[in-house]
Image (cartoon, rainbow, N blue to C red):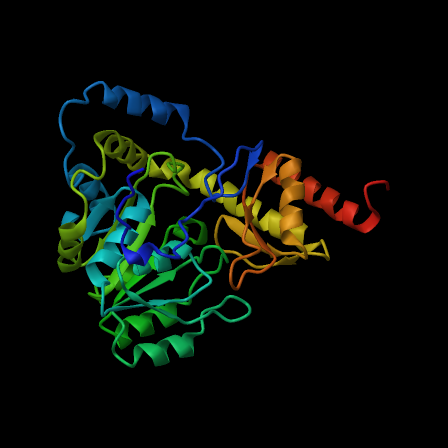
Length: 361
């Protein structure tokens, strides 16, 4: 059989991102909004789609959606760029500011895609590990940045998968301490009700990443966007794929954005659910439960993979990080509906009971 030429050597040893998708009665692993968008918003989308010309290419820059987001944030459309999910924009960030001879500063444990993108683009990764409580080692980051050779940085706030906000004062100091591009990934910002948006006018090196996938229930559509200085946006445009955001996604995103106030109750319910889960899980002495400002909670438990299996057998899918560096024996649990939250609690209690007393108790 004819063989084939080997791929780029950067792929050697690189593990592809695996969201660990499996079917389950309670999907509590991917940090999605547990509720679909309202039926009347779906009707608005369907009405708009009647005028869609499927035979024409979409607006390459999704200018209607750019303008709507800009107006809502007190910016110009030139400060906004729409992407095929936040994932495309993260890769574009590495393409534009990374590459051979350039350096990315990372603060693990955090979203593993950041480091993968750096490696794919031949960028050197400088890891500054978080402290035991998963807070950023601020002094170590600022000390490393002071060397002046870092090209870009990503700070996730709230952090995925650990859940905590980054300190606003620290980010402000970081922005003032470097000319590196600093992306603050605010994918979960709606659940913390905080943003670094006010700092855009003061710092040309600040980039904010947001998504429709979490609070706005559009994980299945793939829409993200960045807010940044217009010069930075122009550099992003140079590396993006043409027509990366299709016409249907643009139409859906615009309709949802116009109705974004309608999601405030959903967001409040998810925050209430998070606080409820934190309280109930903290009552279980076998679990170490980490505080969260997001729509998920990280827990540590002995033999976490065994716990994951026990939950999945009972119809509850959570995310297993038990073999990830810095996250040993950790599971990440997305906040579900009230019914899903109760099913999760019952399933964890059942697994813990089996551990204490065995199957025959």
